[in-house]
Length: 350
Image (cartoon, rainbow, N blue to C red; front, side, top):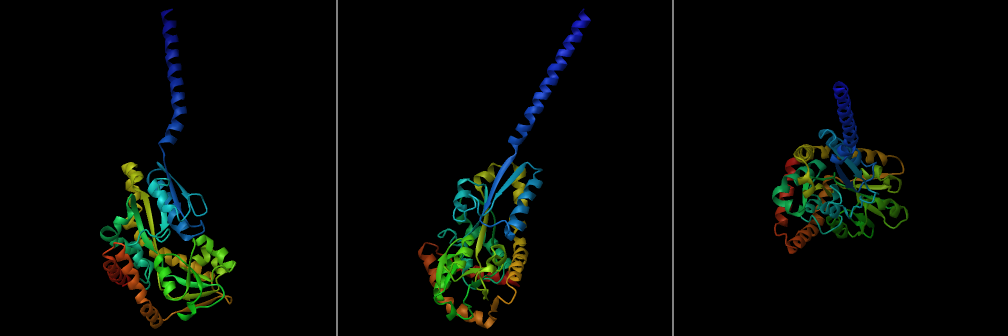
């Protein structure tokens, strides 16, 4: 009888242990899912854009792989609720999204030091502009990014003036044209050339150009493909007059709350390791847009070095006024920053 009791007790203990294991296994799925760090990454571009396809999508997936899928990154591109270009900075600072990629000039009034690089004829390539921004970030630009862990600053290749029906070959041709602008510096440049700047997000340009609300836009070659603007922009002035800057950053509190291994992976994929990639990327992205405007229905006019020098000289009073305005806003070293940018851009262009 005692033997039967022992056998029964063993069976009961085994049954309880098995049941406990089943319960533990059942709880294991949800618990593991709860432990996964879910990161929201927002930007303002369409998924067809090179920055989404070649930069942010691979970056997100590499972060997941680096953390052995401890992290799950969901991307909210342009056109989604979190992909509003004018709200990205506020969203990431407030922690509504964890990481964001935005355009420094929208909304205006922010990143004034960073956007000095947008001034006409400051840099010649995306690579030089990006390396210049990153070199100046610690000592000259960091104070503009309170509440953020900056992962990269970068700029595009020098942009063009694209128009719908009227070609632009000289400065006089700019007069009276309604041109979309991407930043305050480019707005000032257009005004100095006699154009009427029009503010609007990139995604609104196609419709407004098609309807005749605007005559053209200051844009890079890549947008002719990624935003399909080659369908409405038929004249292209390759003046290489300006660049526009971008930021890529995480909410600082969120970043600091992540485990060390996750922060290490973010760092590994950002900063000094990410900066060298933007120049080659922009060259590839621009190539696709340039190819989109080949054909008899498009006209491309390229300014010579001598013509670019004439434009630069004509725009010097505008540049001086822009820097003086920044000094009036309390940025006492605005001219020093501009001089440093010119110096470093020339160095990195070598």
